[in-house]
Length: 403
Image 1: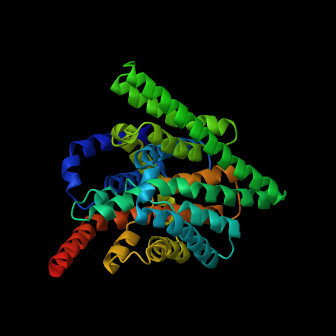
Image 2: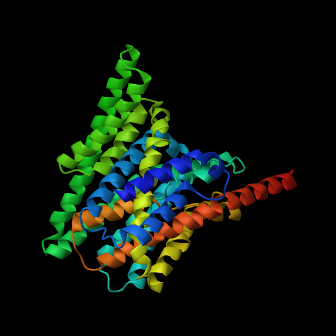
Image 3: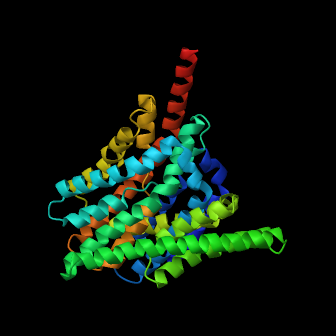
């Protein structure tokens, strides 16, 4: 209970000072992860993220937060965003390459890990976090095209990473229980397929019902938002109940809803910026508690992987995907650097733990993902404002010289 009390005291303090914090080169996630580390150090002590009750609490909160993020981001961004050539390149070329590079580097640095676990590491750390990138996306010094591209990428690549993760988990299950791999691959494909079908069904039908109610004047604006949130949770629950992936269902459901109800994303944005942000900050607070003991067992391989994950593993695929776009080198570097890892990586790691149970290399896997997220929160949080301003100034000066 003391953890909950401390968290909401922090929420109150940060809320009162939010305008001033917004002007500082730090993120709200940084504040809450430090608060969590403080709580873990002085009060909570060692917390095993794989054992109840903490595993249940953390996974439930993180799960709900990611479902809402997947659904709202997909409904806001929509498939029309793929008309943005840069976003399409990042999602179709850069995302798979990031996973492949992540797998290869994990296999090299952790040779004792089974290759499928290296695959789970690569898939879990591939998606970027929209919340951690808000400072960049809102900075008017950056060209709108670049800001929009990064926003679209972070809104869609978390959903795109889930199928890869499910396949690697299926291979891991087959290896651990010594059953035919084909069976588990089939289960993974069923999870993907059922998730897509449920997402399409709930998104299209639910969106149509909301539209009809709105046209007839039956629904108020407040309950329209509540209805959209209900659809997000319904996609997850229904898919999970019939053996599908709730995360894929939420992602596809958001895309379907955005197709039917054009302003759905804008309506859901109000929630994601308030209640959704509360859930997001709670996840980072809990991560701070969990990560403290991991720091005592930090190895050079884990730290090196975290650094490479935020640099080479991310930046090289981005550079490859942007070949032929004639973007300046500083733009390519800027887009490559601002791929923060956050909520999605934490939840995908917890999903893998939940599905696999106890497995060889579990401790290393948890440390790699959580330490990478921790490093990203601080590295991207501290550099977002100064690098955005520096990049924007460089673009302006270059354009002036050309004129």
